[in-house]
Length: 344
Image (cartoon, rainbow, N blue to C red; front, side, top):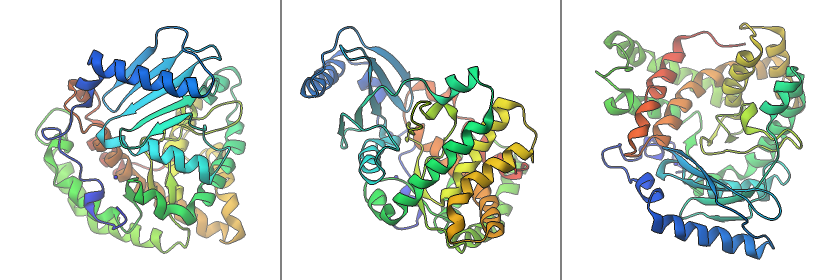
């Protein structure tokens, strides 16, 4: 959020101690400063703002759609828990060119980024052409990005990208279970005492799965952690919105992606379409690994990544913004998924 596989990588401030970027985001002086920064960066790129920005505010980020004489551009300000995204975008554009939007400008310290418009998303395209087979082209392209990044994973950790490598995850899970505020213990939406006890009892088994996953021989890389059709551009299959990302076992991607495809197309667990997409994603690794071993690792990674999703939500909600309450159940909700069947 460090290279060492220890809980501090995710142990950001609790909501009571967190910075309050949303309050700054509403400050006209802050907005004027940002507007000047955006205008200056666009001017250097030969672009001119032509109208008022269109804001979208979430507890974890503020996004502006900025109209220009060359079409829209997008400004994003991340909160403290997701601020690493700006630096990650720079790194991915450099390491895997053509796989992510090329930033017009970033401010890594402030967590600001300015990106060109990428056109319609895959979600928009799929709404017209109801065919999940498009993912058979998208997933190998995403796998190629991960394989390109893997040798440089240490650079991402140095940028503050969270360390969710399998070796780190048991301690991170234990730390999360000791965070009653994040888990909503005793509050509406929180786990029952029985579920909390079941989660604590599951830690040794979870640690064993992490150990087996680490031994799979597939190196850690960037893991988007929220790769669905709303975060892929339809025209060129570039991947965006990396605020949930981590350095992790790459196969954890399958958790959200297959959940999203199953939901979009009404597919049951184990559906042949989902199995085909899993295998299409794994295919690039068959140059060095047996297919059966890759499928086993994918199953382990999906379980491990359910905790990663809970941690991502905790980071995103490390703010005093009252709107965080709308999303707070996601943290215990993802932990409860540990006891639900997987898609494949």
